[in-house]
Amino acid sequence: MSRRFGPLFGASLAATAAAFAYALALIFLAAPEERVMGAVQKIFYVHVPIALSTFVAVFVLLVGALGYLATRQPVWDRLAVATCEVGWLFCTLVLVTGPIWAKPAWGVWWTWEAKITTTLVLWLLLAGILLARGYASTPEQGARIGAVLGVVAALDVPIVYKAVDWWRGQHPIVFGPGRGNPLAPGMGAALAASTVAVLLLFALLVMLRMRLAALEDALVAAEEAASRSS
Amino acid sequence: MSFLRAALAIAAKDLRIEGKTLRTAASTGLFALVVIVVFAFAFDLDTVRRLGAPRVVPGILWVTLAFSAIVAFSRSFEIERQRDALTALALAPVDRGAVFAGKCLSNLALLFGLEVVLVPLTLVFFDAADDVSVPALAGVLALHTLGLAELGTLLGAVASRLARGEALLAVLFLPAATPLLLAAVQCTRGAIEGSMGAAEARWMLVTAGCDVLYFLIALLVFETVLEEG
Image (cartoon, rainbow over all chains, first blue to last red; front, top):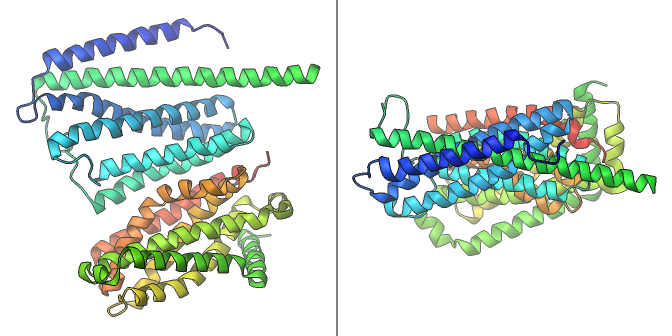
């Protein structure tokens, strides 16, 4: 484990910054203003990619948790804890950007619609995992508990979505089978660029958090070695 | 020892302890009663009648059941913590899945016992007993309580491994139980109205799927939960 940031990190940082600059230029300069909603609709280009990244995070969390349960290698736990924390952060951003758009567009800050409710339940599940990890008495116990709860949460989320969807509905469905492409030409490009930028940012933050976890482990190991030799 | 016999032995042990002390039944039952009374203050009978009992009572019933179940789940592993009985259970030469199944069975039996008292009482308190289809309601309760018991047993075991983890159980359990609680409320409405239709059948199917999924997850991870350290 190197102490300095490697060239991979520098390259990802540069790529993320460039992608964001390009995406912002497309969003505010190239993409046409939406006819009914006006400038408010621009938040769609941030909201949708962040929501997408949140659900990518849940999937990677499942992979990390199952990987840790199967192999007990710390690297899988670092992946799980990183995606859990960054996923929780992104989930928070989804829940913040959504209402900012919903108030002018729907007239209410909040509705108990399927995607919103699922995102809130996911936020609670991820917060529960982070809280439980904080209660653990050893890092290994935290990793095991985190992996178990990660599997439960990740597999529960699709069921929560289906259940709330039957219970309620009304989220704007922009993409879906048989709908064609509803976006004006400039809008699609801006959304695509923004999605790439946000996913890169997500990957970058996960990498940083994993590196931090590795440093924490190294520190604990060094302290143990020091206390044994003294 | 076969899986089923081991599970039954563990469940019988729990129920024997419970039969001698009645501590879980007493604390869970009293807590449930308190919650029902609080609901009666929050929504007085006029409000319930105006909205229609089938729209309000299922929610009251399942929130009460879920809250009291949390009390039962944390008690279930508290008795294993005394004199470190959980370590002995973990050392027993049986499948870890059987340990889970046994704890789950005893929790399920306790919750069924609670429901036998609580459900008629709730229907009477909120004047919702007139059109109830008893077999339908029994089926709804059985299927959804099974799911809650599985999830609660798994998460109760997780919480019991953590210092001061009892406080955490509600935070872990209630969000994870969202699909079960939604389905339970929908199906219970049908049972109270005395008409189970296609919508309720679909919800029952969701719950049956959850029951199977939670059991499989528990079999997969319970060994990890029981590990020492």
